[in-house]
Length: 62
Length: 257
Image (cartoon, rainbow over the protein chains, first blue to last red):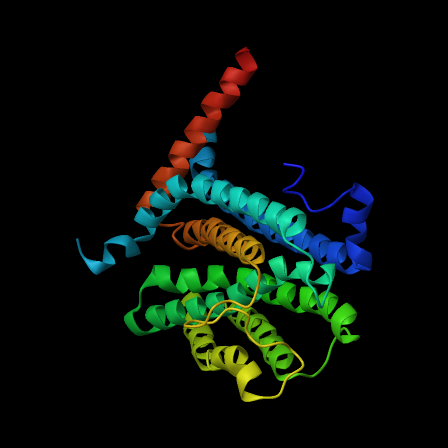
C-alpha cells in the first residue's frame, strides 16, 4: 500500500508540488458546488413530499 | 410492452425509488476510488507538475456539461413534438445539474489555467463557447421559470434548448477548428490516449462518479417535479394518503415508546 501511494508525507501531499492552492481550491469549490446542488434538490423533494401528504392530513384532521 | 410504458410518471416514480440508493452508492464508490487513484497514485505530470490533478474533476464536469445539454435538448424536443409529459419534466430536471457542471468546468478550468497559462481567463474559443453554454442553461431556466403555464413554458424552453444545441459541437471541435490556448483532446476515438494508465483510470472512475451522481440528482429533482405537476392525479393522492398514514403510525409509535 505504501508503494501504491506516491507521496512520502502529508505535507508534500497538501503542498501538491507548490500548486496546493489551485488544486485544493478547485476540489473545495467542486465539493461545495456538488453539495449545494444535492441540498437544493433534496429540499425541493422534501417540499414536494410535504405538499403531497397535505390533503390526506387535512382530511384526517377534519 | 409499448415504447410509452416507461413514460408514465407514476411508473417512473416507483422505479426511480428503487434505483436511487444504488446510484448514490455507485457515485460514492467511484468518486472514492477515482480520487484515491488520481490524488494518491497517479504520477506527477512532466510538464504541468501536480497542477494537472485538477483534470480529475475538470474533464468529467466539462464532459457532463455537454452530455447533459444534449440530453436536455433531446428530451425537451420529445416533450414538444410528441407531448410526452415526463420528457418535458426530465428536461427541466436536467437543467440545474447541467448548469452546475458547466460552472464547475469553467471554475476548475480557471484554477488550472492560472498556474499553467498564467491567467485565470482568456477569450479562447473553447472557454468562450463553454461560457455560452452556461448562459444557455441559465437562459433556459430563467425562461421556463418565468412562464406560469407549464405546457407553454416547456414549449418555449424546448425551442431555446434545441436551437442552443448547435453550441455543443462548437465546444467539442473548437480546439480543432481554431488555434486555441486550451489544449487539444487527450482522449479521442481511434487514437491511443496521450496519458499514463493510472491517470486514465482515475479520470475514468471520476467520469463514472459524475454520471452516477448526475443520474441520482436528476432523478431526485424529477421525482419532485412529477409530484408537483401530478398533484391532482389519483395516484399522487393515493401516494400522499399512504405517506400521511405511515407518518401518523410512526408518530403514534414515538408517543407510546
